[in-house]
Figure 1: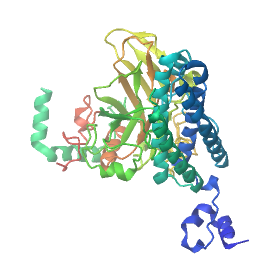
Figure 2: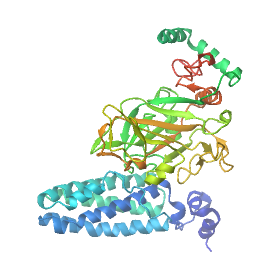
Figure 3: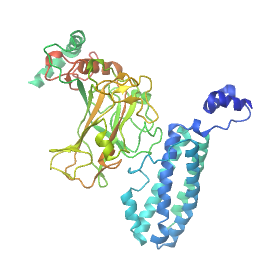
Figure 4: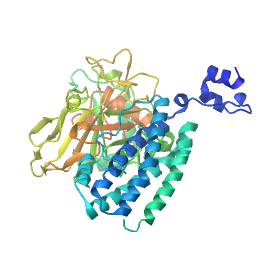
Length: 183
Length: 309
């Protein structure tokens, strides 16, 4: 067993990361469960329902929108969100966090309430496009906002790595959205 | 008449207040002929700001919560800590007591998409949750907890140990969700009690609740042996008429909950707890019982400890 390995077993990955005595040329691979702080946990537990709902909303586009540009945008945003959702869910499970949504039934920034979602699913054509466009921008902006906080207030390297990647993705996605003139 | 008396007291300044405190500290907690009916004081605070933040449940993650209405400390945000609350300095609060830098918050109420703005001072009681009210001690600095649950079912809200009368307006009480309507000109009120037994070592816990417990048969359980004040938020919303469109940011009426982050100046809180709760009085924010004026006043007319300008 390496020094790093023994150190992690003895004092835990978190302490190992902080104690200079544990410092070696090989960085320790921290265990997600022991390094997740309350900010990391809150971020994972919010990003997951946000992405889940966003995918549900994007899925409405093929049937409700008559605008090819809008349908194309929805088709473009969905796969990256599916991948992101898988990564978030994997980290939540590695961290040993519950799978329940702590925000169920709440009016959350960047998300639609159940009644708003139902109303959207009954719209079509330009009316649908208009609400969808607002929701896409709300989702991307709000998820970017909470993701930025993880860079400074988060702790788990795995969580922070994903947050940095998602923040970059959001910048690209927002640029794409702003180029869709029809929105 | 009362106004004149107040003027006289303030003319006497700190000295009068100090004598009152001395009387309270040296005299017996409650005279034998002085029937104890209450053991409480109240703080009165207005809503200062609204934000989708929760420094206890979603620390350092602004925008990660349903919207809350914040009262008390004027600096409360997602990054709030005991140091930040204290660092705001005396008077940085919407409460009458300039040395109460605590943060209090609850979900914002909406009518449709419009917030129901609470413009007047709300009442937060500090009471005894146990029979032996003389054993209640002040909150330790930094103690924080969530009362009630934004995920509660209607049944859980109705049978919760903190439940008092549910939502009420006019003559309608014991509503475990919002009533269908309230008489014109009435307020929609809710009272809910907090657990008042502390485990003695944790200022917070993973679920923000389990370091606190409700008393059992008027006594703190062995797991949580330290009695602290029992908070009872009496919150009023200006909502009357048809309430069909009324909701909380956290959902239905039974999702009612509130948060508390203690940042009182310790000697001020100790004076109020000792004089009003341990002393068996029904005090206002100055630590004065209108019905027992002979018992004196814990704080000066400026709501501060004697000697503080």
